[in-house]
Each structure stands twice: as C-alpha cells, then as structure tokens.
Image (cartoon, rainbow, N blue to C red; front, side, top):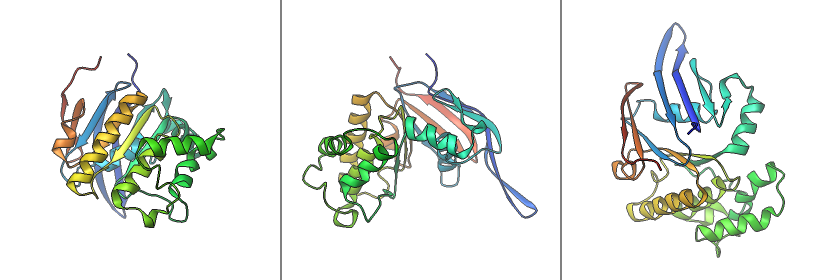
Length: 230
C-alpha cells in the first residue's frame, strides 16, 4: 500500500541572529491511506511545527515531505496551495472561521476556490451532517465554541480531502463538547475514508487513533501502532 504521507529526515531550524534553534531533528515516518495517527508530546516538542510541514504550510530546513505523491518541498507556494486545496483538510484549535461570513458561507469558501458546482447545496449537506442544519445562517460570533468547531469540521471535509490535519481539535472545548466533536470527527473520517493526522495533548483522544507518534525534544521518541490497518 503506497503512503499518503511520507516524511524523510525532516528537520526545522530557526535562526535568530547568530543563534540557531532546532525545533525538529531528523524526523522520518510514513502514514497509510485511511489510517488515523496522533502526534503527541510535551509543549515545545515540535508537534504543531511538524503538522505545518506535513501540510505544506511551511518549508523544512532539510529533509522532505511527500504528500499524496507530491514532493511538496520542491513546489513553490502557489503549487503547494494547489495541493492543499485538492488533497488536504484542516481543523484548528481556534476554529479559524471568517467572522463576517455565516456558517454556510464559511463552508462554501473552499468549494468556491475549487470552482465546484452546486456549492451551496454541498455546504448545506455538510452542515446537516454535523448537526447544524438550523444554524447555517448564523455568524461565527453567534455560535458556541462547539458549534464553531462543527462548522470548521464541515469546512475541512468540503473538498473531499484525502488527508485531514487537526491541531488540538478539542483544545478549546469543555469535556462534554469535546467528546461530541471527537465522535463527529472520527465518524465523518471513517465515512469519507479520509486519513486523519491530529496533534493533541489529550491522551484519551490519542488512544482512539490507529497509531501514536510521540515527539520529545524535537526528535521522534516513540512510534506505537495501536490497531492494524485493514
């Protein structure tokens, strides 16, 4: 089975004047299509930086990332954006909704960028799936944190992504709301056959994935397969 994500000897070093700071040091792993993986580790271990590099939001100091068959480090920003638009979905801890748009319009945005047809109906269907059929004309400020995250999940699945990156998807939610969002995320992921890679501090959430990659001090500390991928 070919990998949906292949990370080869990835390092990220930030230069501040004469000083350099290594955030990631020689990270390598691959992820199979349709699987779920949690990236865990203490604060400052490089989890979010790794997620950004895997998604093509940033470039590595050395090493490379092959995402859906594309060596994204060799692409320019417009080319990386095209790969993200067609293959990737994102869910952020801070929701990242556009406040001047309604829930429906927020979900329509990625579909408009791709030039898809019937985008309004597609967005409505996704909002129905996440339980917001009666809230789709509300603005972000009129929605609770849990509702905003539901909108961001609907938006993330709008382009039928092959891989979904989630950065602390329940980090800003209370325990009960977080559990609801977790179930929704895993259910939709299974239904659409998407690959899920998430960063989390929540060990219970990590244990629900197929695999846990643990970072420590910018290095890959442990790589544990929890479930066999069919």
